[in-house]
View 1 (cartoon, rainbow, N blue to C red):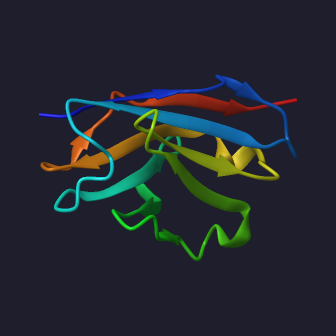
View 2 (cartoon, rainbow, N blue to C red):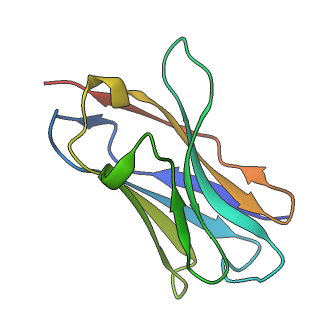
Length: 116
C-alpha cells in the first residue's frame, strides 16, 4: 500500500506561485498500472475539486477551470510529484490533497491559505 504525504507552504501571498510536493512511499510513481497521480483540493465550505493529474507516461491533464495557472511535474528519482499554481488568489485557499497509486490512496492533506 502506498503512502502519500503533501508538503509545501502554509501561507502564500496573492499573485505568488504555490508549489506543493507529494512524496510517495511504498510504490513507484512510474508504475504502469497505478491510477494517475492527482491533486484535489477543498476550499472552505465547498466540495472537492479535481485539479489535474499526471500519468505513468508523464502526461498531464489540468482542469479547464485552472487553465494555464496550474501544472504538474514529477521526479521519478525522488518518487514525488509537484503541483505548481501560479498567480494565486484568495480563492485558492483550500486543503490540498494528493491522490493516487494502486488503490487511489489519499494523503492527509495540507492547508494552504492565500493572504496578504
